[in-house]
Structure formats: structure tokens, C-alpha cells
Length: 241
Ligand SMILES: [Zn+2]
Image (tube, rainbow, N blue to C red):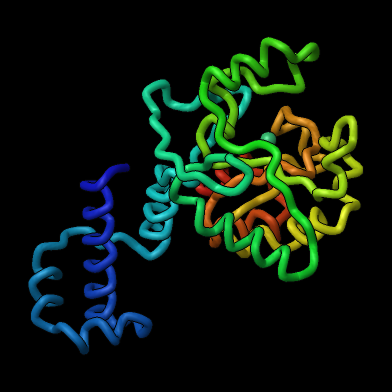
């Protein structure tokens, strides 16, 4: 739902609040106290007042169109015409400019806590992803071009720098390293989730990756990380019941 849809939803919410107050719903009282004339005007134009559940559902559905909840996975490609506005971050990497600040805050707080995180992959162009995909022997290990969150600029791979010299730092053992532990415990406070959790491979179709962080916004990140759901499951809960 785009701008017009949002305005409509705001109208509905306002109408609900005002109408609800008139009909005696106690939680709506402050609004009617503050703007009785507006309330009267709106109520006279309403035929069917949606109930609170309807409004909640509309808000949730509307949220699904937000850029930070974009679902990209083996079954769902990113929009073909999508253009990512990137910003530079440490190590010569780039991310969607809208996640630069939370990312930098997370890395800086992680270091403040005494750990040593290191970005080893972030935004990838289509050509980068094609190159990676073409040279990966097992095609299940790398997302098809157009199906990688890295191409959206919303995801990045972060390791504990102590593993930078390993032949392959992207292995399960990463979860035991101190910087990684800190990130896995705290990422949601910055709007990130560990995108491919253990035991969710059946749904994500991606192996457990204790290094791939995806931005979804603070509120969603907290719910997702606390619930143990993966993004696919969480998005289902936002759809019409
Ligand atoms: Zn990744």
C-alpha cells in the first residue's frame, strides 16, 4: 500500500478513535477531549466504523510494503527495477544508505563492549552476485542473482576478526566467537536480525548462517529475535488472518 493507502488508514484510525469515544469506549477519551469539533465532523461522515482489530490488521498489512520488510529469498526475487542508494561504510563496503547509521552504531557498541567485529560482505551489485554464483561449485551455497539480500543492500556478513585468517570463516563455529555472540544477542536493538537461524533451514532454504545480518527495523527485529521465528514466518503473521 502506497501513500494514498496510508492516508486512508490514518483517516480510518482517526475516525475510529473519535467514533469510539462517542460510543463510550474509554480508551478513546483523550482524542475527543482535544478536538470535539473534528470528532463531530468525522463521525457524521462515517457509516461503518471499523473495529480495533480491523485497524490493527490494516496497519500490519500496510507495514508489509515498507522497504525494511522486503522479502527476498530463493522463491522470491527482488524487484527487477530496484535501485539501491548506497552509502560507504568501513572496510570499503557499501550498504543501503538507510541502514548505515544503525549498522555503525551496532559495530561501535560491539567494539565498546570489547569485541572485534569485521564486515566481510555487504552490498553486492548484480554483477558481483553473478560472479559469485558462477564460481560457486555447490549452487545451494550462494543465492541466485536477483535473490540475494546482499543485492538489496539490506544485509551484510560480519565475522569476529579473529577468524579472518581462517580458510573459511563462514562456518558454524563462528557462533562461538565473542564478537559474534555479542552481535547475535544485541543485533535486534539496532534493527537487525540473524536472518538464517538454526533449525529454520526448511523454511528459509538457506543453511544456518551465524554471520548474515539483515535490517528489518528495531520493532520487527525485536519481535523476530525474541520469538525465534525466521523472517518468512514473521511476515506470514502480518498478513490477513
Ligand atoms: Zn550473507
